[in-house]
Image (cartoon, rainbow, N blue to C red; front, side):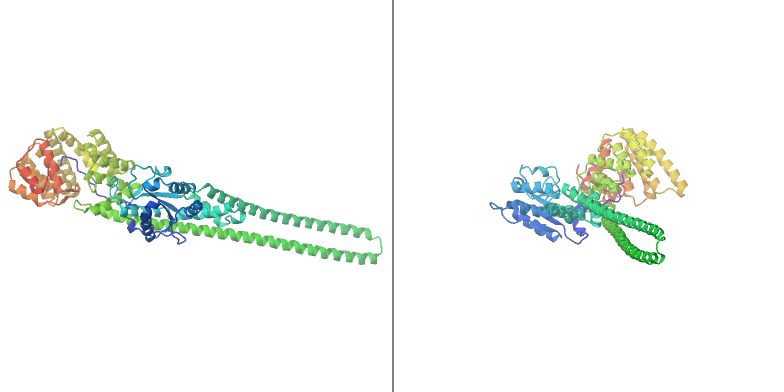
Length: 609
């Protein structure tokens, strides 16, 4: 009761890795399965077989080599082909595989091909160092690792499935393009094995939309796409040159025809001095021949123009087809994003329901599910999840109570401009929990929260002077300040609503507490009774009223009230009734207030000191 009131309710987001069993296995855009190469030591064959069966049941296509390595066998080619065909490599890490030259080679080959590598640990390494490329990666534990709470085969499989499902389609394309690029390279980089048309645009779009954390395209990927683009440009340039050459030929033919016509006219003028009849007959014959030749040439030119026009029309149709396919691809990407958003909304809805109903008696499994959802949301930057993780550590919800970690999570949420987290930090510094008590910092954070419209922060700011006096042991001063604040709150609420209500009742409960510390017990009981009359269902008010009854000597009535709410949760701070009573009694003893009845109540409520 000595601390400024703290509200931790609110929605939270989900953790996909923690609830894999409730998320549908995604399918790639072409309906295929994600191909997973399992790298393992022969000593771990039984576990690898179990993992193979589990992943196949989850909808993945596993590539696993069960052949031994014999002398003279081209095992690198066989294993290399399996790795190149896989979309992801799962490395079964154990003391045996960490020291196996073949397993180390498989890791290096996967790294060379820029394959995503997911290391899993199924038995303790015993001090053996993993292969160098795996030393800085996060491991998924398939056995009960004491340093990783909740680890085991089931949670390990759920985490692995969630990791495999991440960037599903992009990784499938990584494998498909790498296979085509390797075939092109092995065939001497022949142009007839390159991409063409819309395939080039899709490949470039695939490179540009690489998800964060996904493996980079290899140099061979980029060479293959670049060569395809250059070959397409060269083909288009050649087509343009052919059209330009055809146009030049046509122009030359027209010029030649014009020159011939001029020559004929000149000959006709010279021949007029000859026999008119002979000239006429000869002239007609020559003109007919020339006209026939000219007609044939014009027909050829027209045919060439029709061919050029047809090629241009076909080229335009291909461009239109390419544009339509790009629109179709964009629409598919939009639908995929919408499905992912809907899936995330569904998970967020579950997280919101769980966190909004946090109760002191929630079973351990449900608490862990809620925490998993909060951690996933925090990992994805959701500010509400980050804030509620701080609340979980502050209240000991599913984790050991840790005010320092609570403060750290509140600071992360406040950095994202969350007003409620700023309020929480103000309370942390005011109460000196998780940080040294610092009223200047408390006021700074509360003022920031109030500036963003947090109404609780405004009330806390007004209560801060009395809280500071109370902390310093100046209980009479704290009581005077709280009396003035309670009168102000009642006047404001009466003016606004026509009568005092909830706000006045809660402020009178705070006044009761300060009256108890000042040892003005009659005043404390009078104020507590009035607060109870205004808000009879408030457990927070019943707690201060029970204290006032005890110090006034009304033992039976006080005991009945203490025991009436055993196991209930106080809405204002989300604490169990017993926890609240224990905290209050500790504050009384710290202030030098004792009563013989306190030990009996602690025994009845099962409170250990």
